Image (cartoon, rainbow, N blue to C red; front, side, top):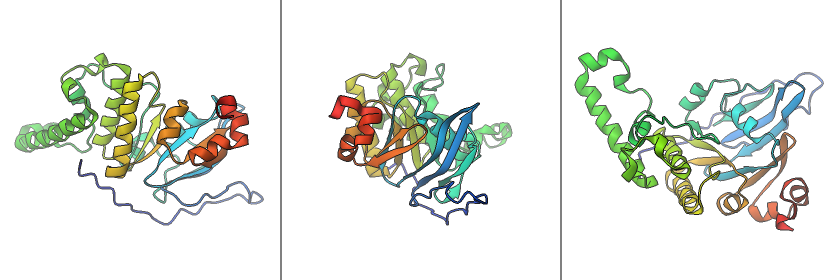
Length: 286
């Protein structure tokens, strides 16, 4: 399926990071990837939720981020996507620093994130939820509705056509006129994925996409994510506690513990890593 998503990478030279005198080991530089987290810290009161975390996400991968509750995974997502500002460290996306930018600014750079609890517009239809996503719509300006009505209608038809194509892809086309709030939990997860496609992202961050959905919809969601990565070249970083989903979908897998990266590798490597077994997986893979 071709959604005409422009995904030509525009890697720039990484930003030079200023390290305070006497703190030469404060930052550990990762190999340059599509997304580089470099020595990031975030505290709430006296608790360090993210504690000098450094990791890299390579372009064209479906990277899993796992770890025990309280490891700092969702906090790191919130720092990456601008909901929290990091206390220290830097975040590079396509070679440019995005640390401290607001969510709307990061969205404009073609990074999209979802939440553990879906955030659809419940009183709008499934189709309307998708048609809201594209930026810079001509009809957003009141005077265009008066003086450029033909252009507004033409663009709305183009957006609707694309939205219908996306709904076909995620297999929600039969629900296009239903209110989004009436969908099941799994259908809402598919709607979130469809909304991300309308934003034409380079990278999508998924926060527990498999939470609360039945096995049939889980398999459908996994298939769609794999297809988007392979055919549309969208890079995914996802938090997930369902180990079956992670081990079958993600490569590599990053493990966080106590606010920092504990391990990274292919699924088989993570299953046999004694540090991971001790901190998180326990007897599941012993």
